[in-house]
Image 1: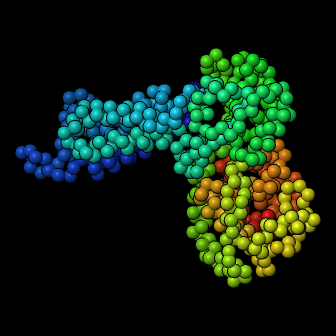
Image 2 (image 1 turned 45 degrees about the horizontal axis):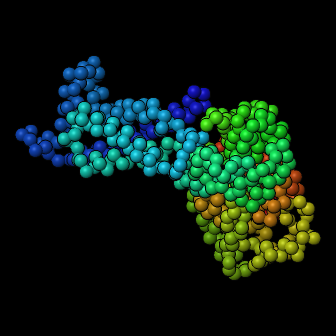
Length: 488
């Protein structure tokens, strides 16, 4: 096992050990062990006293070498959870979710049932060996058999948690090249749980420019998460196509009869299945545990910001209402993660229906590429420049962050018409969550040059980490008061 995998499994094991031990002890103390007297001649004895007496008796008979201070029900429960997890981790069905295996349906219920049987069997053996079976509530015990498997399924992999934080694998989409409609590989788990948006057949894999162009054109209309290419008998891949697939920051699955000779060294996984080689690599930057950790940070920062800045939020709302009436908060169509469109919230600092005036003002646009900016924009409501200078009009976007549509840190979300002007390289900006602030905002907030936007967006994507997000968050307030921004 590789070091990274070992660390990942160890951390998950420790996490599960901690949370399951806490829940089990809490449940035993508050539900499983009734706080009543035993119906015996031992007046005043409770079920808990009888359990303790059984443990002391077992110590005298089987393990007298253990110090008496360690003979406690909480320690016994912790050891049981530890033993159970060791056993569970030794079963391949729980520790390893292979997306390159065949799966005919989205069988979460089947996975839950397998874990349920393993847990219930272990629990019943435990309560019998330690003579708890006649001393605990049977009704609460039945309920408990369902609780732990649910927790284990939630943390089996990142799919469930990602769904809770707004990114479900069932909402992801893929495109295929030269993969027959009746191909057995369409029953792979990696495709079963995702939606196909286009199947491109009879295209020469030597025509690199056409393949890149097709992916780019689809990517501007749909949010693609996975690209599948059937190389069949081919053994070589064009260097330009290979570099494009590596840099596009998506999941890539290559199916081939023979081993592919790659030009670059990169992290990938290869498996043999039904006489074919499946080569899979995932360069999706914010996916799985990385996405979950980023969302946890986003939710915490957003909640704290909304609470602390609520007086300013109310003041801005009333100020705009006084200047130009309703609507005070507007919703704009923007493009988010992997091209998914969403409604971005913003305090209205422009005249009503200002976005429809863009066509008439094209001649005044200072930037001739993607960004639409006008010096002394006539659409701006008089008196709202201070709100724009200090980005107070962006405060409602913390709601978008809570909804999972945006992040606190990331490239600024642009309009769909702007996205269609992106080059194939700049489409990479859609492979991370758009943000309220970013490298551009803490470095060159006033820039009208698209090349500067491009530089900072690509730099953020290539170097993304939670530490980088934290640094940008901490530097953003300083940049607000050191430089003025004209807004988008």
